[in-house]
Length: 317
Image 1 (cartoon, rainbow, N blue to C red):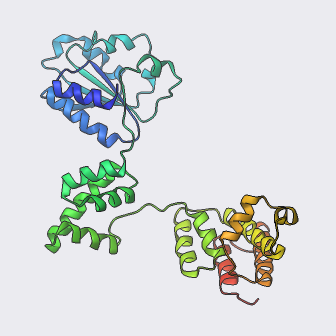
Image 2 (image 1 turned 45 degrees about the horizontal axis):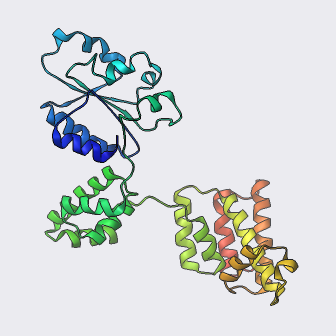
Image 3 (image 1 turned 180 degrees about the horizontal axis):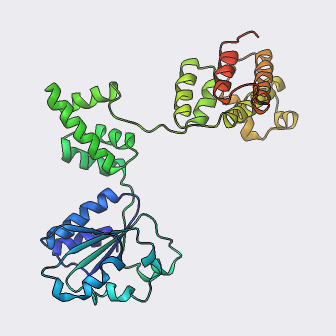
């Protein structure tokens, strides 16, 4: 069932006995759970599994009013095909409604194929859509809302937490929500997940952009990037730059260097920021550092710092 079909169903208040919600954006799914329970004039009841409430559902005398049961990641139910249709058609639960939540469901499985018409996927919303929710929540301009969504990796629950933080900040400082947002960004009050910026880092080192290199290296350390992976890429890139610079001009550079046209293009784009002797020296330092790590003569945590100081500042050993 598509999301728009679910919305239409709730608008008409024509509920079905069983819902299956899947996807990574469960915070949005919870909004729809609350809407379903609200239509039923009740509160969602969290249960461990279908089996834990199955007997209770069959004993109609215990049911004074209809309930909305929410069950998350019931792995056993995925293979209990003998009772699937009983719940799908409301034979067991009567006026009660069951909502099954699964973070992931194998689309090749029998369960997925059998329940495809009952399944609603809640995938991450786009920054543009989330910006509308943010504007509605705290009145933040659309362009800032998009930025906030991207900072929060389009995670709706995180975005709502940050919105709450911004409301409190604006109230505490007695300022406009936009001023509060700008202040929060400058003061790093909004947490941004570190990104894998390894290729940007390699590019910065090859272009001898010192400040940018160290900034990106901090991000790589934050996500625990393997130093040997960084060293391997540094070696490959510096070697390509050396081969291209040494080859000079001509139409047969690929033949003379052994590089592909794409590798040559990338090497040329990095420009000339090191002399031939600097490049040779950099390659020797990178190879030596890699060997020292593997033989245990240098700690991995210190290796990239040593390479950066040696190459970017042309440190004489």
